[in-house]
Image (cartoon, rainbow, N blue to C red):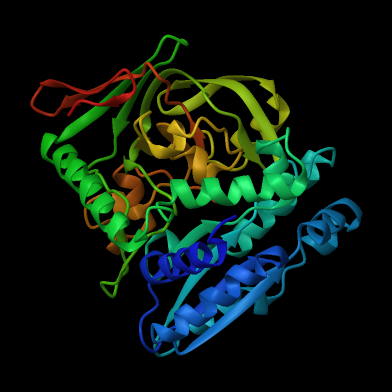
Length: 413
């Protein structure tokens, strides 16, 4: 690819300085697969140039992960040691603090053919073990960001007609394009994009909505009641120390918290969803009083059931997000088989936990206080795509007005 090295450096600088935004004196932890080493090295340099005190890189490998899941005993895979949690908490509690960058190279079917029940139990045990750290990220107590790089299995899934090298090049080009790197100055591009999303966020908050209603010709007819004192948020987040960061790269959404007991109707998935390294396709779920009471999937129905039975809160939703069909990810015409991208191609809901920051003053509230506002609680937070090209979305205001938000899949507000 022409100018690949230049584009990769721009991408690295952008995801470090705008995405995770390490501050002078902070430690940056980078979690990265082995194939991402060239990108990780650039991120390390960029973080030091931004003033980071230290940069730690944790390496991973999908082949090792699959072998462990396939051949390792469940007892060993769920035997978590205190240092695995403390390596994050010790930095978070130290002077200067910590921020975390996750570089991911998805394999949509990493665990295809393996024991799904075992995978679910192992992952649930890890989520429970890491709950104390998860509270740091869910409450934006630290900066965190997720960005992607290609892997051969992922590239071949998106471009099956190409050989491995050509598919990797095509996926890099696609990532650079939808992440606004190709155009020249991604920092300026993203500043303008975040301002646009912030303006939509402010309009949504000014409406003082009590619910949103989704309809589309595929059969979706879903009313999502909002949590008490729900707040609409957009691309950028702010840590408890006031540092602005970009959790997801890319991002196109404006989102808030549903009330866990006030979701009614049926909704159809519009894009496949990857859960525990396996695919769920063409699914439907029905809600009554906020909980899923019926579900079906043409592929991965047992997997969908495991997701919904993950814990007490996994049959309710913790996020509803509005994303126009005109987003660059959707306009690319490609299905990414990656939630990071596909959730930014379509409106979506998330089974599981609410983000505390999507209710007024929520990051300072206790779990009991959040629950009283209708904020869902769970170890899970799994986004599934429900937006269609003909989605019609309206909002009901607390003063009784009905306002049109989306027509034919795009904003009209």
